[in-house]
Image (cartoon, rainbow, N blue to C red; front, side, top):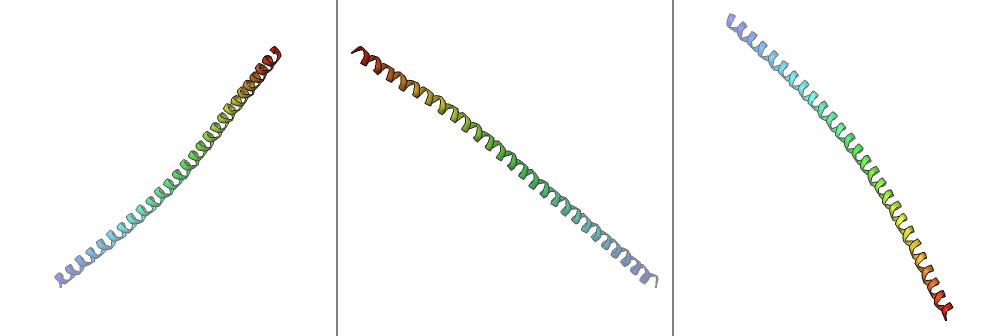
Length: 98
């Protein structure tokens, strides 16, 4: 009878340990899942922020380039107007000499 009780007691202890270990494993898996979910969310937020910053930088650079191009075009137009006026003046001077 003592042997039977010992076997039952060992079985009870083994079952308790198995259930306890399973519970700890489930808790660890749940914690890992939660941590992974938080990491994914943080990565999404960082990617969104980086994309927004990059979009702003590209937009600013495009605006700056457009402004610089406009300034150069205006300067070129002014020089062309001056050159045309100089040509007209030269033609007028030649005509006056004749």
